Each structure stands twice: as structure tokens, then as C-alpha cells.
Image 1: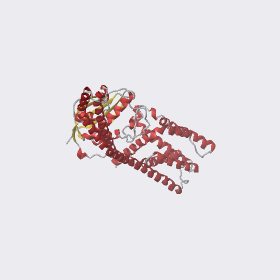
Image 2: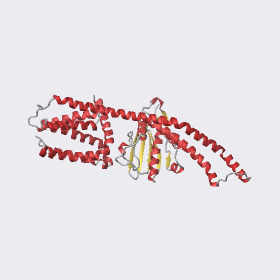
Image 3: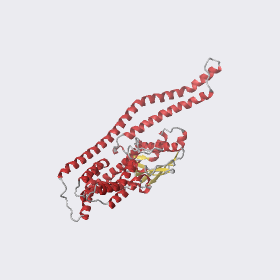
Length: 437
């Protein structure tokens, strides 16, 4: 029983964290409405349209409660993990508790019946079905308790059963709407996988042809250039070419091969990242972390030698983990892609990869000294469909790479975390249990 309740609570909190992710860009206007609305409606219900009961201190408390919500973007790094819990409590007070309490204190006045209906509709927009149920039960229960403690003769004669179907209808519609949003997310992922598979199918063959053609031309290029020079020396009528162009031909062919390899690797990453996050543990086996890192660095399609020199690899002491080498290589691909992109775009920084082994397992530490990640972005970087890049932090975009990394690490029985300071560094720590079996 206790285990089931704990699991339910963790699921509800995880859902609330996702809700914070999507609502955080709108916390400022939402919080502003609450901060202004609580005291404003005191004057509306107290002076313009007098109601039997009003409570200015309670309203001022509600107003103050949403000031930190307005300023969520500026919360210190150490407090960011508590934002979801704070938002949960603020919504619990502002909607189910406050409106139910005021309805009870006003003896079911029609204005407050409509207000509770509006609050229920707003809860439908803000909460998933599980938290909608939990907040309704807890909020209404606390409101009744507060009403009983602050009322000399509490009574519910004004409660009419004819209102129940209306509120039930709102809740059922809310559950259906939230279910629909989950279906939309799954369909979005399925559409991405279908599109990625189509792109891979359409591009693999021409890329293979381009690479094969470049390799063949590269093999015969020395003989062709030698024949050209002999024809020029013999005075044959051939069009003259500048020596610099002749010297660059080999490099052009190498770039063509490199771009073909890069495109194939990008297709592999797209297909791997958009696959459903379900991994078969029977395919797992003890793997060498050093081998995975060296394979990733060898296969990653750096755009230039300069990009390759950004990465410093410190092998340290190798360790084994139970997992899949291909998946691990793609985790490293995603980390490399993000780090190289941000370091290059910022025009500063280096990338360092090192290992730490211990009897309990091992750690891979992936650190870059690029632009860093803003505090309000950091809690969300492992969330699927949340994307952030330098100068663009509105949470829009595909955002699948780091979510894939976290899912792979969880499948391996490990974890991935990130620490970052803006303008200084970002450090990902991948922790693995000791390999067994």
C-alpha cells in the first residue's frame, strides 16, 4: 500500500515537472495576473459587488505566493529543483483551496459558484488527470477544514446536487484533453521516426554513390594529373590549369568523402534518437568504456581538423559496464555534437573527456569550457522535445538527443547529470554500475 502511494506520488511529481517545463515561458504573465488579480478582486467583491464574506489578508498571501512564480527565470541555481514543488503548492492554494473556501464562506453565492467553475476549467488547462484528481481532493478537503475551523456553525444546506454533473463534465473533459495531448506527443514521435526512416532510405544510396565515385576518382587522380602534365610538356592542345587548382583536387575529393561520412553519421544519429525508448537487455554485454570513446572519436564526422583539435581525450583507467557499445557510441555522438556546436558558435572553449574507475563501477566525465547553460534551462535539458541553443532558449525545437542519452543510461542501470555555469563550463557526468554477467 505504502509502495503504491509512493509510486503514485512520484508519478504525479514527475508530471508536474513536465508541466513546469511547458508553462515556465508563460510564468511571468500568469504570475502577474495572479499577483494583481487577488487584491483587485477584493475591491470588486467588497466594494463594487459586495459579497457576504471577503478576506484581504488571504488574498494578499495568494498575491505574494505568485511573486516568485513571476520571477522563476531568476531563481538561484540551488533552488531550481524546487520550482516544480513550489508551483504545485501555489496552484493548490490559488485554485481548489481558495475558490472552494470562498464558496463555502459565502454560503454558495452564485458569483462564487461561477468562480469555482472557472477555477475548475483553469485546473483542466494546467494539470494532467492525476494531479487534477489529487489537487481537487486535497484542495477541497483543506478548504472544508479551514471553513470548519473558522465558522461558528458550519453548514452545507446551500450545496445542490444539480451542480455536480456540471463539475464532473469539466473534469471528464479535462482528462480527455490531457489524454489527447499525450497521444499527440506519441504521434509526433512516430512521425519523426517515419520521416527519419524515409530520409535515410532516400539519401543512403546517393551518398554511397557519391562516396564511391570520390574514392574511385581519388585513386585515379594521380595518373590523370601526370598525364595532363606530360601533355602540357609535349605541347599538346590542352586547356591550361593553375597549379594551385591541381594541388587542391585531392583535398576536394577528401572533403567529399568526409561530407558523405558526416551525412551518414547524422542519419544514423537521427534514426537512433527517434526510435522508441525501449531497449532489450538481452542484447547487453560487458563493454569497455575506453573502446567506446575511441570508437566515437574515430567515427564522429568532425567538420574540420580544427574541430577535432577541440577535443582532449584523457583515457585514465578503463572500466567495464554492462550495456551496448553502439548505443554508448551514439550517446557520445550526441554529447560531442552539442559541445562542438556551442563551443564553435561561442568562439571559445575546449572539450575534455576523461574516465574514473572504482570498484563500484566507473564515471565518464564530459566537460566543455564553452558558453555554459542558463540556470532556467538546465533542469529541462534531458526532457524530450525540449531544445536550447546559444541565443535561443525558448524551449522550442526537436530536443531529442539528450533525452536519448538519459534513456540509454537508465537502461544501463546508470545515470547522467549536468552541472553548468554560464560563461564558464558545462559538465556531464555519466555514472555506471560495475559490469556483471
